[in-house]
Picture: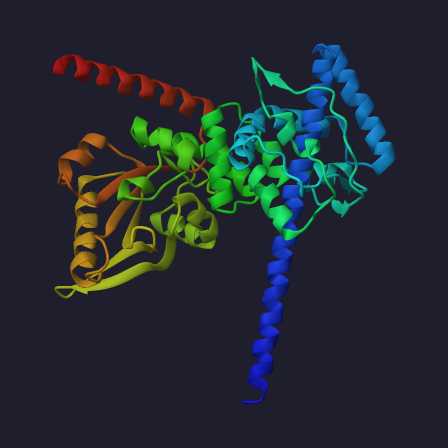
Length: 431
C-alpha cells in the first residue's frame, strides 16, 4: 500500500491539472465570446453612425450583416443576436473605456492581437441564443478597418487607439496576453448572462445583479430566478439609503445581522399553493426537500446544521425548526416557521432559543446567535414592543409566489422619497 501512495498522489495532481485546465478553457471561451460580441457591437454602431444613425439604415445593415455572417460561418449570427451585441456595446462601452484608460493610459500595446476573431457556429441557432454552447476556434487574425470612433457627446466612449480592433502587432494568445485582455475587458460572466442583464433598464439594478452573479457564480437560470423574485428591491427595502447605494457598487454585503433580511423572503420554489391549508411541519419539510434553493434565497454564507434541533433545559424539551451557521458572521442562525400571523408569544419563544444557544452552544470566539421568525404576516409595532431594543431577533414575512416587481419598485421609490423628506426635515431642525 505504501508503494501505491505516491502513484495515487500523482494521479490526483494530474486530475487537478485537468480540472484547472477545463476551468481556464471555459473562462477563456466566455471572455473571448463577450469580447467578440462587444467588438461586433462596436463596429455596428460605428457603421450606423457613419450612416447618420437612420433607423431604417441600421435595421437594414444588421439584416444584411446577419445574412453575410451566417453564409460565411454558419448559423449563429441572427438579427436578434447582432442587436444584442449592439446593445451590449452601448451599455458597457463607458466602463470598458475607463478600464482601458486605467490599464494602458495613452500607450498602444505591441504584443496584443490586432483582432480577436472567433468562429462561432452551431447547428441550432436557438441553442446558441439560449445556452451559447458554441464551437470556439481561433482563426488567423485579420485587420479590421474602422472608419470612425464612436462618440457620446464630445468624448470617445472607447479611444480607438485602445480598442482591441485598433491594436497592431502579431497575434499573441499566450497566458500573459489573455491576462491583459481580461483586464482590458473585465467581463466575468458568460455571453448568455450579459444578454439577460442588458434587458434590465435600471443601471444600479443591473450592476447589482452582475456583481452577485459573478461573486456567487449563479447560473443563468439562477440569475433569472433572482431577478424574477425581485431580489434587488427586497434587499433595498430592508436597508437605508446609503446601504441601497452600496448594493449597486458592492452587491450584497453581509456585515451585520440585518444584512440577512429581505422584505419578503420568496419561497415560490417550494411549489405550495398560497391558499392551501398546510402546517408548519409541511412548510419545514418542503424547505428541506428544496434546501439548495432555500439556501440561495436566504443569502450568503449559510451552512445547514439541523432541522428540529432538540435541546433540553430544566427537564423540558424544546425544538428549533431550522438551525444554520453563517460563516461570514461567525454565528448560529435559528429559523422558526409560522404559517399564521406572528404573535408576541412566538417572539418570546425565539428569545429563549437564542439565549440558550448563546449560553450553552456558541463558543467565546463566535458572535451572538441570530433568531429569525419567518411568518405569513407580522405587525412591526408588536415586534418592536415585545423585543428589547438591542435584540438579535428579527421577523420577516415570506411569500409563496413571486412578488409584483412593479409594486416593489413603486414601494422602493416611495420609501426613498420618505427617507429624503425625513432627512431634509432633520437638517432644517438642526439649523
